Image 1 (tube, one colour):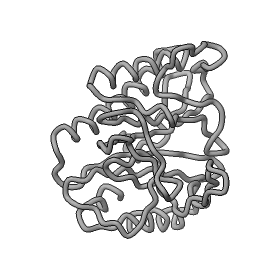
Image 2 (cartoon, helix red, strand yellow):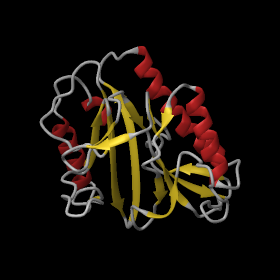
Image 3 (cartoon, rainbow, N blue to C red):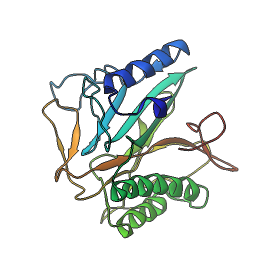
Image 4 (cartoon, rainbow, N blue to C red):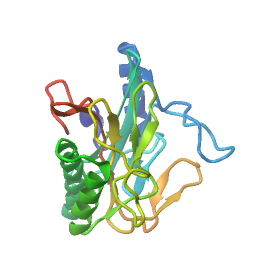
Amino acid sequence: MVRKLVKPSVATIEIDAAIENFYRQHNAEPLFKFYPNSIEGGPTFPAVTCISINREVVHGIPGKRKLVEGDVVSVDTGCKYNGWCGDAAVTLPVGKIAPEVQRLLDVTRDVLHLAIQRIGQRRWWSEVAEEMQTFVRKAGFSVVEDFVGHGIGRNMHEDPQVPNFVKRGYRRGRNDFRLVPGRVIAVEPMVNMGTKEVRVQPDQWTQSTADGKPSAHFEHTIAVTESGPVVLTAGPNGESW
């Protein structure tokens, strides 16, 4: 549905309204609307989706801004259905985009697919995160370190934190977690074309790249099972972006 909506002249608030209506039709509870701000005294989030365009990394607020040819737009949303939470994001091109920006989208999508594959092959999350970081850096891009994925279940944000990188001093057992059956995590690589640094905007929600270059964001909710990873937010036919 979102893919069909992402096109020139569509306002981001229209995309948000369509998703909110979809949730309502399916008796799903949106998770983002009125979510509290991490900034003391900051406003709650006003929409059911985070829609971030071009240099915006995450937490963009939908509004009257209309998409134009050449934009890239990240749509991130989550809901609770039958008592369980799901969280997913995709970054889509608006019409024809620059080849290097398309490569940014491809690398970000591919590093998420790499993570899903490795979840079934590795014992510790840090092993997966290190491979993700290496993959992105070899492509010439940077991994955002200010925001990470998370455990998810009855609530949207649960332990553990799920980084897409490994910092110096990261200790297995204290900072790490094992990929054991029954664990469910939201894996969400955020990749920047330039610097990894981000800056919060005056709306106290939108995070943008410090150098103004484009960013991409892909996310899936993934269950670790005895037979391997299961992508819970894949489409009805099992497609994964």
